[in-house]
Structures are given as C-alpha cells and as structure tokens.
Image (cartoon, rainbow, N blue to C red; front, top):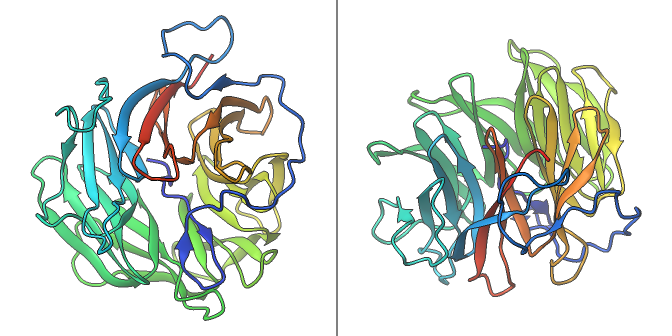
Length: 373
C-alpha cells in the first residue's frame, strides 16, 4: 500500500494521534480546477470516459469505521476500527479485488482476525510480502503485528510502542514511526526491524518531535515530523549507514505522509494546503501544488502523484481525490464530494479510497477509480 498506507492522522496538542479535523479553519485559497472531477457517488466505472476521468466504482459498503486499506494482485484488505467502548471489535478484512460487496454480511468479505474477541483499535495497515502488518492502539502504547495472508499465522513484531503508526515495508524490513507521548517530550522515534527478524526493533533516530511518517529513498531513511509548534515541522533524511540527519525542509506546517518516487520525495502539508517535493539535499523542499483543502495522504507510481484532501466542511462532505504529474503539473481533482475521505492505495490500474460516510461511523465504503482518463 502507500507509505500510505496508509492511515492518515493529524496531531493534537496532547500528543495523541487523532483523525483529521473535519473543520480545520483553513481558508480555501484556490479556485476550482479546470477539470472538476466527478461526484463520489455517481455511477460505476464502465470503461472509456470521453477524455475525462471515469466514474468511481463502489466495491464495498456498510463498513464499521474503516481506517486503512491495502491492495495486492488479487485482494483488497482493510481495517475496521470498531465501535465498542472496550475497543475489542476491530477487524482485519479481505475481499477479492473484482468482487462487489454492498452488504457487509453477504459473505463476499472475510474477517481475517485470529482473535475471538476481535482486534483492539487497529488503525494503520501495510502489505509486506505475504503478510499484512498493522498497528493496534492501546492508548499511547501500541503493538505492531503481522499476519500471513496464506496461513493466517500471526506474530507480534513489537509491543508497548509509544503511539506507533504508519508502518511500511521496504528492503526486507518493516519500518514505522513512534509519535511519542507528546511533541514536547521529544521522545518520538523512527524504527525498523527485519521482516523475519526476532528481538527488539532498532531505532533509526530517537528523541524526535512527533514523527508522522517514514519512507525509504536510495541509501537513506526519510521521515516527516510535526515539530514543537504548528509551523515547526520538518522532513529529514539520514544515511542508512548512519550519520547526521539532513533537513530537507523546515518550517513545514504539519507535514504528513512522506513517500519516495525514484530520487524524489513527496509529502503534504496539512495546515498550509500544499503538496511538496524535495530531494536528498538540505533545503530542497518546494511546493509543487497549492490551494488544496487540508491534504493528508499521498502516494505515487512511476508517473503520477495521488493524494486525498480531507476537506474543510464541518461534516466532512467535501473530501477530494487528486492526481498530478510528478513535477506537480496537470494537477486535477479526480473525485470530489467524498464523505469523510480517509485512506488510499493504488495498483496498476486503479486508485482505491475509503469514504467513512457519516459521523455515525457505520456506513463506511471503499471505492475505486481508474488512474488515467
């Protein structure tokens, strides 16, 4: 999934990770794009679309608080956070990729959970070879867990992590960030561990101010961190062989969801409505797309960027999915009016995204739309 896979979070002053605010108080600085996209709830993807984006296709409905998703060659996987007061009703779900499942209990989606009591508040998911790996939220002490999609065998990768989130798989390792107990505590970490390794994970960096995501670039680990104030975020890199971190961009306003495409790095600044690009050089970060509506998750393929805007309305009804070339040109909204846009993932043909649907958290959906016009 995306490094993104991802689940996307925005930070609160108390140090915990919480969902993006539905009315962030941010100005809508931009005019409507030339291509206004298509409405999130209109029609299905029927193929050629007369030069515009195809209609999104609803593939899964009636989900209970879906929080993250991943795809592989055959299946769509997602996490359902659950509604129970004690948190023990989270689920890990799988559905064949080309199956439409519009009724949750219709039997077309399978719960992969191996615990009879349910998962405890699962919130970030990635696909790692033949495994699914995720984080489970026990207040500020989180577990990192992986499970085989072939045998269903489950293993605990790390426990008691301080606000672990955003796992990714790269180079035979699992990486994640620990936001820490608070930004002010400066106890955030970026960690890695071999997918088949035993023992404790190793820290890439420690004593950081609220790391939010991690990526792997040629010869380097890269991470974004929120910083000690709203305009003190940064994106940094450190050689895999060790050394002094290099600040790619400073003064960032809640940088989230850093990803690497080739030699370039991309991330979104949630609080200043920009899509950013940088290289493994100090001070190389530049805005390539502006005028967004609280962007919070980005991913990429060999030629395009794809990102979600959480929107600015109080009820979360104005979420958007966007696309642009890797240099930021030809930016256009693919889907507008996504109700509580939440997470995205891509394969060779489609962009998949979650719409949580309503504030009641029981009408979640997964949609997909063709990448190209």
